[in-house]
Image (tube, rainbow, N blue to C red; front, side, top):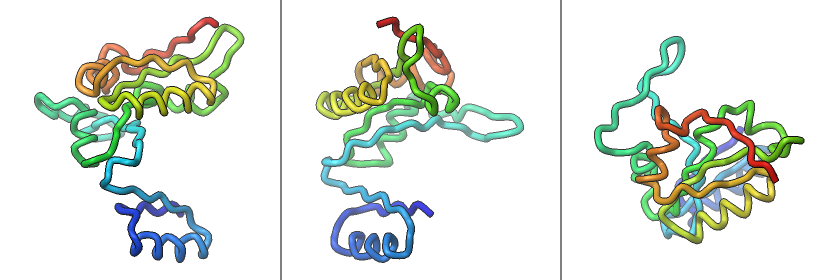
Length: 151
């Protein structure tokens, strides 16, 4: 089982040690802004059999997601791709799978760009969470657009 711990202080670390000792995985987070969070979520009001997009008003899905993680450096990525395009090697004979990303922290975006390039993706920075996030959020013009970049 994978256990998430909000916080990375002494208590969370102690619980994490117990969890790991018993064969489980642990994800620790903190509120000091040192953790880069890749937000791959999409905001659904309901799922199968009739999926509906949640109405967030003027908020983008990215803004909503980052509001739940105060202090985190959030980069929106992977949410516009179907899992079948993420799971296999993103390098193809015709090129690399394009990965759109957006964020407000330049260093965090650089980290995610480097990491996903290492995986084989061709990351494309769309700008801020508000503007770029709007393009790749569920229902946005780049949502579910699967393209390859020729190298």
